Amino acid sequence: MLVAVMVCAWWTGKDLLKQYVKPQVSGETEELHIHEEIMEELPEPTLLYGMAVDSFNIVEQTIKPRQNLADILNPFNIEARIASELAQKCRKIFDVRQLAANKKVTILASKDSTQTAQFLIYEPNPTEFVVFSLRDTLGAAIVQREVRTVEKTIYGVINSSLSQSMQEAGGNPALTSKLVDVFAWQIDFFRIQKGDSFRVIYEEKWVEDQQIGIGKILAVQFDHGGQPYHAFYFDQGQGSNYFDEKGNSLRQAFLKAPLNFTRISSRYTMKRFHPVQKRWKAHLGTDYAAPTGTPIYTVGDGVVVEAGRNRGNGNYVKVKHNDTFTTQYLHMSKIARGMKKGTRVRQGEVIGYVGSTGLATGPHLCFRFWKNGKQIDPFSVKMPPAEPVAKQHQVAFEQIKQQYTQRLASLDQEQAPKDLRASL
Image 1 (cartoon, rainbow, N blue to C red):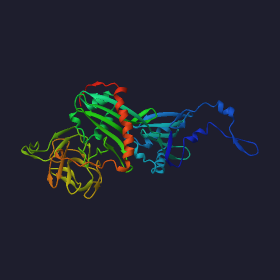
Image 2 (cartoon, rainbow, N blue to C red):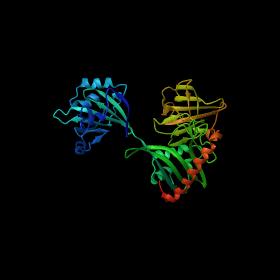
Image 3 (spheres, rainbow, N blue to C red):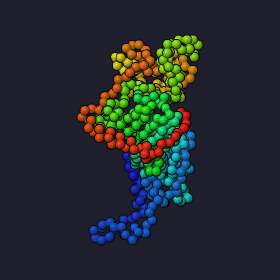
Image 4 (tube, helix red, strand yellow):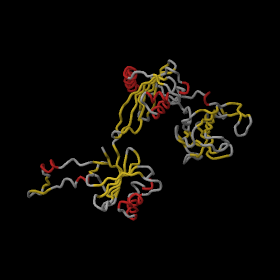
């Protein structure tokens, strides 16, 4: 199923179908009739991007670096001024400067000797494409593809690594990341044990026969150290969240970590040998090693009280969450757009990107945490949870919980456990 969502001056692939079926006039009422015998003789048209394309030469190619719309269309008998006119006419629909190198374009050209382009189709992502018309009326349309949601299940037993165990069980890194996010405060995934297991009910997103991503995790049971941890996705009408079997929110007032990190390279300590200053001193922060450019998230709602640069911290942002807690994020490669003093931020919002500015030997985030004006180790603080399932929604939550609990319990019977060996 294709749905046109934005149109400029022209539409659509349906117009092309008119060349296959011609209405005829008969009788005094001049009603339109299509002879059944003609319809039976007509072959099914070949469809591409929802358009009948039998009367065109189809050329697929990859956009080269620094190639623009005029460059792409020039070999197909389209002058630069026409390409420029098309770009101007449709700039509110699609800015042709967004044509990206290494992306595919498809040209539908005439079958005569001129090989003149009639349509150009560009796919910016798997869920939509842009159709440019180069016929008598220049125009463009953005067409959304139908995205199907398929419910899936997965079960696995861990020998060493969650990431590889998930992959061996049929999952992928995106699902692993979502699972870790669900239990960010309940489970330390760097301390999972041999024999731990996971059962997950989740969504996959599909366009036609191509999987394009992971949707929501709907329910999880993660057995860790002999203890089962449960999570159930539930929408109370004012934003969704994950809750345990008692209806308590799994989300805390603060995220457990401000980024997806490779490792903790240095913990909060009163005595550490500084790698740049070459002397022993207190390290009142937690260093997270991660590649340059990794997004950094604010761990909780709050207001930016500082955003700037100095010699020691490099690029940094400081957020006041309430009268008790304040956090700071150092050595960023750059501060996210819009982050300045007075900006309100929400938990999980990107405030900057990992770098090595200031006194840093390599890319990492130094994360600092204050409680009542005193710097402390964030791992030593018991954070308050978010609100539980509201009383008026408890019956609905219990129904969903029971449904998913039964399905989770049966997964080890449907999918035999595997001995999954790997490393992080």
